[in-house]
Amino acid sequence: MKKSLFVLLACLSIGTLAAQPTTYVLSQPDCLIFLTFTAAGQTSPTSPNFGLDNRTTGCDVWNMTASVSGFGAISLALQSAPNVAGAPGAYTNGMQVQQTVLSGSNPITSTTGGFVWMIGYGPWVQATLASATGSGVVNGAVYGWRIPSAAGAVGAPTSVTIIGPFGQATMAGSIPVVIASNQSAVPVDEVCNNPSLVVQSLFNLSGSGDTQIAAGTTGKQIKICHISFATGSTENIYLDSGTGSNCASGPTAVTGVYQGISAMVLGPWASLVVPTGTNLCINQNMAQALGGVVTYVIQ
Image (cartoon, rainbow, N blue to C red; front, side, top):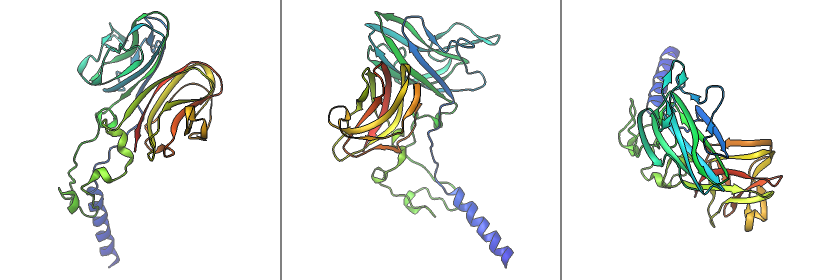
């Protein structure tokens, strides 16, 4: 009797696992490049191979974001190069193999900043400030993922068919999990996967204390998807919230203090939430240039 009960429970467990819907998880990037450019011709990374070695990593989904300050004109490009005896050949804009630009532009030419999302493969990858007019600084980052389903640029499908012993093609008939047909009414952390909801805000800061980087909405919360920034020298930084100019009224810490940093990438989240009806700010303990980008959803 005990053996029969064990076999029955094991079969039910396998069927339950098979009936679960596909889950899409935003993973940390497999490839990462930080960039701080102050003159035309600069590239990143420069060491040890004058480019990111993607030969065995295999990243093929890319997102480059940049914040620009001071320059009168720029051309910032995400580039790739063929492999020549274990070293990069000549770099050209975009990916070497099967490139598709999903959104944004490459090169980025806006003097306030911009972004590009693309898929494609290149054995060597770099970011370069191909041209610049005047003086200024470009801060940004490049993120790469190995598989399309791991990157926020691709997004989740509009429908899911559940397959398995207990699975049903119709969500409402699914056993043992019943999923509402009105998915828009269900609060989930996958909001950052929906390009129609995500807001991107570029920022260039210079003062100490709180500086606003995202404006809140009455009765709604800011859900932070991603934030990245870089400074000229190390300092103590944390995210803050509040109302009024630069979170002056009722400031409340959203994160702890990040000690002695000059660059950071945080996310993907959506579970890090700013209190209802408040703005999002960055608090610097010293006055210096800080540039970056934040993406978020207001719900």
